[in-house]
Length: 256
Image 1 (cartoon, rainbow, N blue to C red):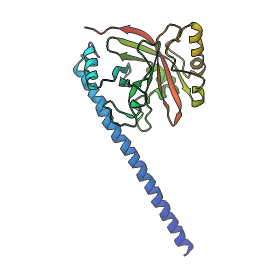
Image 2: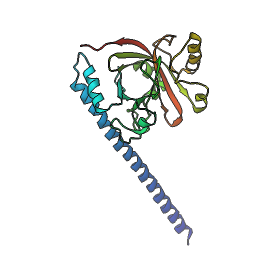
Image 3: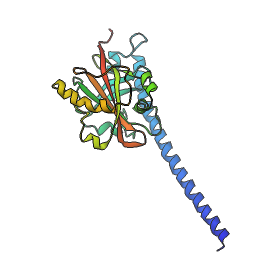
Image 4: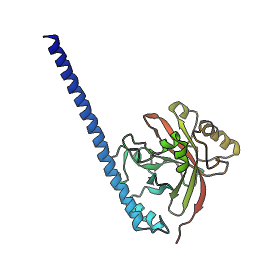
């Protein structure tokens, strides 16, 4: 076989391999986008329920809560950023694996749902809520938490959110954003729900204060504050987590 023919054969094989790789990548992305679309339809159903049970003056109502709860008994609240970057139902199951890869309707979905830790209680000082970072669509779930870790201005423009519960509305202000890796998980328990003393709370806060990536526009967390911990994966590195701490700044009742 001549050298020219060998080179032609090699180029042909390379072209075939590259074409197959591209086809596989396109298939994977298309499959992900289709799944995102189906899950989005479920969330749109929730949006429609809210629109039908609220008005411009009252917004999310207790009627909204009851109507969504009728669609899924695991519904525990609704989280919405003032800026609109994230608006999602919060679910809670008996274990943290259930909604890790399930959509609001309970069907398999790689990006899962926003869900509260199975051990968390609404009466806890620290409530933990999880959500995936989506590799193909940065507009869904908790993907935008990554942007807060990367951009101070983005954080400042999106530093407040609200959680609508069954009987009250809680408003939160973000004070800390930090990364934590697998090794650090062994030494720091961000899941700690309650604190018996100032010393215990101060010990808990050492890690986020040291690792904080933002300059807070909402002050600091202090002993006695109630707060939420939001967690997602870092983009391009699932072994590292993005953690957001937001203190409760207001609790109010629904308007009748």
